[in-house]
Image (cartoon, rainbow, N blue to C red):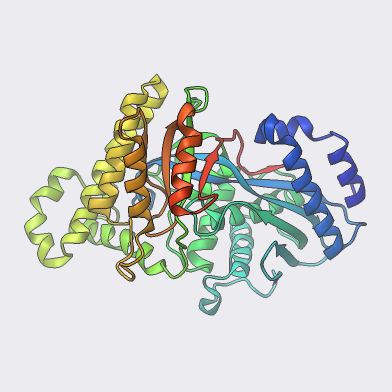
Length: 426
């Protein structure tokens, strides 16, 4: 459809069932207005006569497994109802133009930008070029398109704005040039390739998989080329709880070195045993090697290695707890994960700026409010800045929101819904 027909179909109810499934009935009207506005913005930029379609990619919340994926560990993650949406139409050439709300337009010549360029690290055009290069290496087709995107996956908030953007580029390539046949796990892998090689960030694969696949998923990265992905059939809302993400106002910008230090130090411990990742090392081996490791890699690397090994065990316990409906065991391990992240992984604040400790403050506030309730709280996502996570009883959600917003700012506490799909064409 051209954009006029597309907007008429949207407002006329043609996508109501689809949007309700993704966002919930209570959000239908707001989402229709959001998509309609995006169509108007696309039309103003790229014309009304374009053969356009609508796309969505979820943000993600890490429920279990803090900094385990990059050392081939296990995680539990969920797609959430904060997402990036796009209106996109094919072009006859190999140029990609993406205008994201609030940012300058990215223009990428896919025939020219085919290799990583260090001077373009940390830039969104490099992600576009990287996803395209990844598609080509796997034998998939790519081509030009124009797109307008808007996102409520806040940058630097720990719900993976970069992964959602990468997955969106792959989602559009899949539907425009591969008949939608590139599955979402493959899109996630190619998105990680783009972030590692073209963006210059040594991330794991968890963010991209969680954004692309949808629902609650348990992921075992023992073989990262073929991760084992298991759907976990548990409804947090039906159990009487809401997943709340509290944005402390910190930003992940300029923290690449902090993030990179975690996999680097973990892998330095693994190298002591002649291994490439900690998944191949046992806790007993690590304990016996502590004296030697203190001389070579230092105490923080050892602590981070112990966190990895113990966190991997916790993930298994939490997956089993969710599958059996044992919320007490799940919450117990959520809190234990958070404490381990604070004490041993040490990703709750950056040593570059010890005056800013928004995550520490938010965790203290959450514990004060929730400690006498059947609830849980922990650092969320990569850490160092951004957000914490809390599982809050439904009857306490509004008072929790008010309490956290009063301390950290209006709108800081977001009450979320786990959505059933990840990367989709609407």
